[in-house]
Amino acid sequence: MYAVMAVLFAALFAQPQQAQAQDLAFGGVKVTTENCNDLVAAFKERYKTLFGSANCKASGTASYDFSTKTLTLKDLDITLLINPGSIDGVLVNSSLDELNVNLEGDNIIHSATAAFNQTVNTDTHLDPKINFRGTGTLTVKNKGSRVNKYAAINIDADGKMSVMCKALTVISTYGVGIGAAFKYA
Image (cartoon, rainbow, N blue to C red; front, side, top):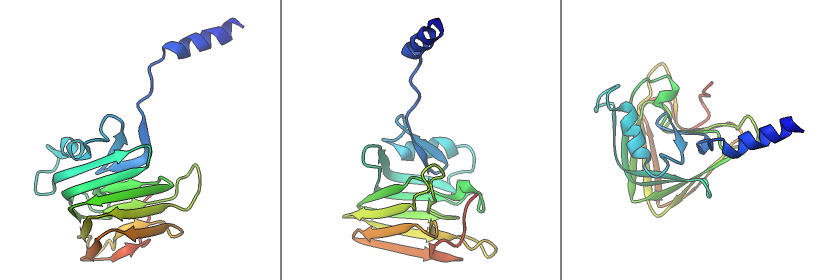
């Protein structure tokens, strides 16, 4: 009885854990309630001294709404050309069951690997979904390399993707534009 009371008392005064979008990262930064309203600032903070502005730069806005599982990109112009072949080269890495991407204005992503990587959630094992929506556009320019043939938008082989936006353009120098050609460990 005393043990149960002690556990309940400790739980009452425990610090709340930082809420985060489990298995969602933007430029290698986990999305949390602290950074979800300005993911561009979180991106810049992480890379400002690591790799230089030629490889990592961003303007415009990116935010995440936990209640609707929606990532909103507004006039985003972002470059993430670091560490080709590693997870850090992915702009949006998600294993959420469903990710909605709301596009506002003209958005452009320059990536070294996948701009979007959508995989199966290991807890639910549901086929992942990624939905591009909104009144805006998205252009993905995937650099890749001759050795590593990355997909600019990589979705698990059993995943689903819908496009209901003004325009989605994918340009892949090496590899494929949209596919499941490469899975990240």
